[in-house]
Length: 219
Ligand code: DX5
Ligand code: ZN
Image (tube, rainbow, N blue to C red; front, top):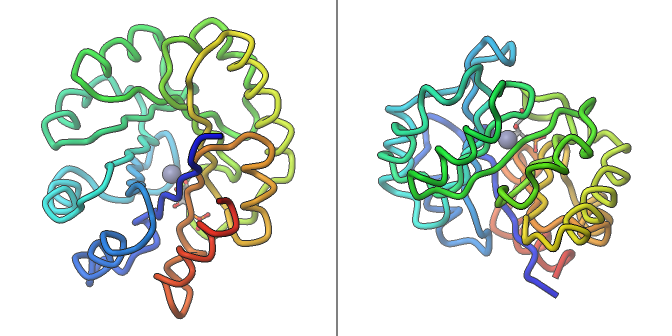
């Protein structure tokens, strides 16, 4: 069985103490940094852009997992590659020529991910699954941290796992939104490989311990 990963979402970090929170993740048992980019168009909210990601990249010592909640993401693929991003995930709902977008991300040397909104069926990925390094299943509607987990996610994880196995693909399944100590194990049991957690980690008293406990739960 492959190792299950935790990706703290910096959206829930204290932006006035960003370096401190990045160092916390560096020293923790977490595996990736999850970076949420929102444009106020694809989602109602605006998070942060290139200067902030550049500052994060300077201090972060783990995989930079970047989740683009932006319209027409092709415009910025090269810029994210130049910032040193490892995984670049675009939304299925934001890409007209998704196959081309995936190839463009990989041509820049990054891993290519597709994110699905809660209303989008995993079946839409059957024709491209072999070209995708990771699929991010949104377990809340994108745009904000701190929302409640949508229970239908378990079903989607199981369906996606079946599609991946049928096509003999190596795609990772990542879950994003409302992840906590109650649903983490159930998600990895259903087939998830990577769990993003924002408010559950950053609003806890002892963040290092919270990450460690989450890791132990899914080990
Ligand atoms: C939501 C973002 C998530 C968010 C998760 O649009 O994609 O990554 O930070 O936050 P929590 O874990 O608080 O739901
Ligand atoms: Zn995210």
